[in-house]
Length: 440
Image (cartoon, rainbow, N blue to C red; front, side, top):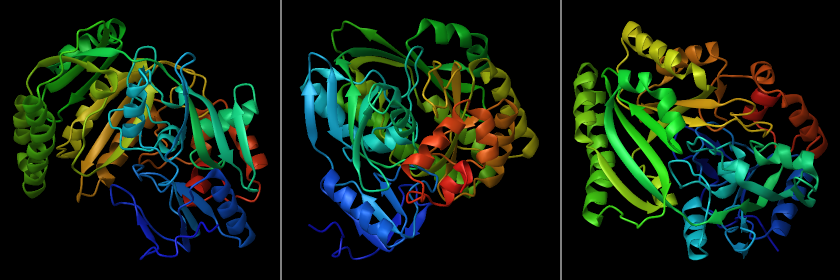
């Protein structure tokens, strides 16, 4: 049994966005938890660090290593699905898009999703991926159990009742606790969502923000910088009947306008930054109101074809409007020209140790930068505002926070570090990113 990818033509790896690269000693493509365990033992014996990687959709160097990179491409099996209990176990490398299809075949669904489904299940939970919701948001909060390979090569199971502290640390473990090889999700019967999307003035959103959050199961909006335009999205459960977008309209609005056309506008903005405000007004007007009803995952998620960089911060929900007002002033004062809308979502308080919504109702502000444009000034200026409002950075998106800051932001941070010390005392799963955020 060999887990080393000896036939791999290159030992380099690049993430989806292209901003993180690694040249590694070995690339392993195991097909079972036992092969993952063997890879970890062999690497540890040679003094090499180990990092697992899924689809590479994190913008941070969370998966970067010069040691052994474990690709989870072959860990994609559905192990079990119990429709009566809703418990479904899948291997860690399964893409969320595939998982949603398999759940639909079983008449099941996740309670909530993020807005893309290109990630693997383990990558999504490990970095705290979330959607928007009044009573649910985090994908990791829907996890009932994990199978994890620890630094000594042991394969262990954990849940709220079995090794509960390991479970709490590993659910959002940022790759620092072990290699997740299988995930058991708590699902529910499949359901439909009625989607309502419409333009709304930014000030009108500000004035009705609390009402929009209170009156909708899932609410978010995109604000087009340098304009007063937003695109508001509200998704609520319905008994049906299903009324999905026609194939032609879905292609026009979700593929052509939101990807091809918008990508063209971004390129125009890169060439002529002074035209960005006018371009943003055009983009905001190009998206018209629409309503449709479809399977939940098809409403939650949308295709993203163009490349970008992203920073996202979680704020106390009550800070949303004042923080956005400051961001608007900052853009004007700094003379920045930002072509990609700022996304705003919400989440209820939860108890997961490293959840960005731990202990407080939360709003997420996501900042994006066009591929090929240096995001430093924009992200640093926005980050200073986020930090002033006690923001917590998304674990898989760009930020400059370190252990000192994060320890003050998370009440269970030291508990997490204590589990890490037991699970990986020799720091087999460490890299420069984990050293910065968790300490060496």
